[in-house]
Length: 115
Length: 114
Image (cartoon, rainbow over all chains, first blue to last red; front, side, top):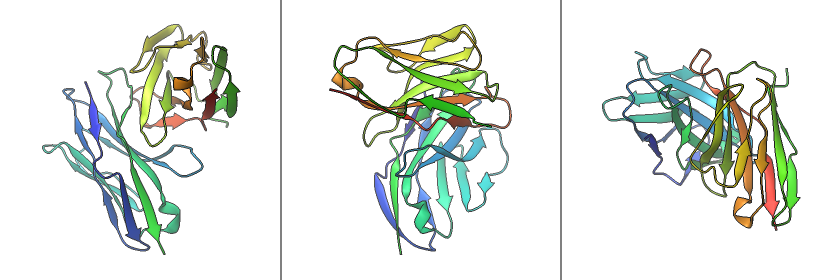
């Protein structure tokens, strides 16, 4: 079974500063993918970044980067130069072909960016 | 390109009523799934489908039925609504492990059962 744990229920970050959101996972599948989604107050789920378990390099997408430490089973999201529009819930999720490509979500971290 | 379309966006049901939440996609994705999100929580999988004619249960399937007769549509049926089914429901599609990776979500249906 797959499990995702996000230990930070909420956090404040100053505008223009970087913030790291923690995510640890557990799976017995050798091949899997890790995803981060943003959910603003409007409710939609916005895909941010993907990391494959066999990818050699950490994923980056604009101001988002994923600090992937496979041995520690962690996939932390780093948001650089925070903006007010980054205030939202952030969810870590994982999926694998062995698990039928179903996504398992963590409980989320609420980020509030202060001006 | 509409992506994933969910209807309705909002719905209020009385306990015991039945209804169908619609999900349609135009991306030719093989995988479709339904999730529910309760207040302050992550998403939990209800049912999923790996292709037309194939469905399976997720983490919280009780009280829901699905079918997948076409690639494009994956309706979710509530058989006899209960207050515990008050939630936001998301439909999601994916390419099933082929690039580009990622799941595309619909905008959600906010359901209240009174």
